[in-house]
Amino acid sequence: MRPDLPAIRLSAAGLSASLAAATIAVQFCAPLLHGTVLDADITLSVLLFTAASVAHCWYRFGLRGVLGLLTAAGGLGFAAEVLGVHTGLPFGEYRYTGLRGPRVLNVPLLAPLAWTMMAYPCQILARHLVRRRGPARPLVAALALASWDLYLDPQMVAAGQWVYLRPTPTLPGIPHVPAENFAGWLLVALVIETALTVLLSRAPARTSLSRVPGRKLPSRVPARDSDAGSLRADQIPARWADRTPAVLLAWTWLGSAVANLLFYWRPLLALWGGIGMGITVLPFLLRCRRPSPAEGACEESQEERDQPREGRMGSQEEQVHEREDRPAGARRRP
Image (cartoon, rainbow, N blue to C red; front, side):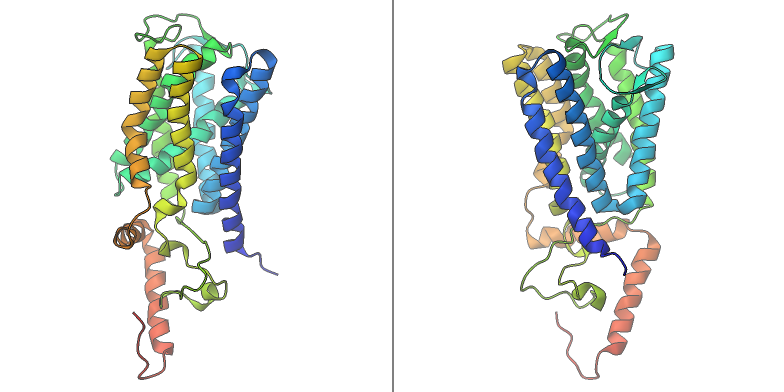
């Protein structure tokens, strides 16, 4: 018996949303925790966030996309951490003093997971803000990913998770973190997001497989999809399917700003991160508003243009066969 792949992908979408909600619940408690309890909270938060990103990647890009995400973000992120710990490049000299769990080459395995958990939502952000393929897409994704470090590094250094051996010069309002670290983050983020853009472009993008009761399928949907009573993936605007990454980015952006402002008493850090992440996250959230039918149609056309040529030819061939099978004189439904 063949597995019901559409149902599996739909389950992955629901799983991703559930994991995202759990991530937010765990991170919500972080400002009130200390010591080993905080360490456990950070570990659980990274695991849940990573699982949410991987599940959504499976939903949108299938197994090939998941393998690409783990290779680009996890693999390259781990390589950058090993290089940084042993040479000081490109982040500056630092040592891990916390982060629970196993380590490989003095790098906690949570570190590449952290790269993975945020690299994927930033990639989705860039796919919405930059509609056509090209160097602008990974650059926007890299800016979003690097801006997150305006929150991350100061918070983790203050929590004792790692320490910089030469923490000067620094940005105003961000003590104990050298300015070169943020330049290093932008460089590594650009490498990761470029690789991720290439790998995900080779995976067939899917959007939503949600069932729409009472709605007839468009004429070009093959019968095997109509048997499931659902719309094909390319019939639903992608922005409807990407609300889980949008919620995670929005929570990271606004939640970190509020925490630094009200709990940690670091207003300049809240300002740095609020402006830095807001440059990319805010336009992404505005694009994820519920579109009109006309906007949805425009987005569908653009998503179809982004698909590999083989996939588009397959859809055209299905339309030709459908027209041939239609009884003579039958009217075509709009």
